Image (cartoon, rainbow, N blue to C red; front, side, top):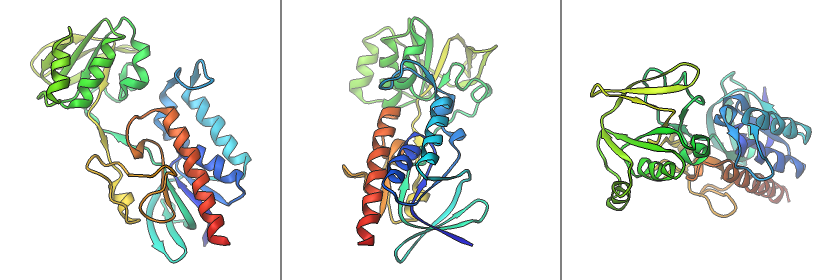
Length: 297
């Protein structure tokens, strides 16, 4: 059996849920594919969002999911398998083999940060291991941290963290940041360590990291700044070709190059911030609803 919707939203993180709230309030039929509990926000503490002094990310996701439902959106807590373009819209198939038709599509799947795949990384995620220096720098005031990554993203993160932490290591196999950023790092007391981790260790939180040169760093935090895996396969199913960094280009209405397809949140590029995701989610939801209403005229 196939279910028909006006707007299908792929992703149940902050961008997707905000898109659902705003689209549903425009009285179009909305479904959301994805599990709110899988969002990286669920493992975060929020301290840099408008009107919020401090809140658990999991609580914010639950409130947002409840709001989306109250306004009429259907949350299908399963993942997407395929998207097909068809006359008048899109056909989606879920992991349980449900088939859905939608007139407009909002892509808000987030991005998957590149992982180290070393012992301790998963266990200490949210307990000292972070993938976003911009998001979490404030939690490491007067602490000792290491930034992992070869390129400019890691150099920028190290410079940012130096404003908060008492000591910063930049650990890389090779230092490939731009000459300008590398010079800035060298002009500080950030220690550049040419090595790579084999293990992150601790007790209830991160306490240190073992490197492949035999050195063991005593740490409070590990920031993995190696970029993100793109969503190229998903995007190309609807004739969207991400840029060289794997991000989807959108205009000020969060519209992509494919009519009826909108994108929002981390998938559109840096910064990976809650405020950006929510703002773009609002725009994408309103734009998708307006597209559907215009098509019905």
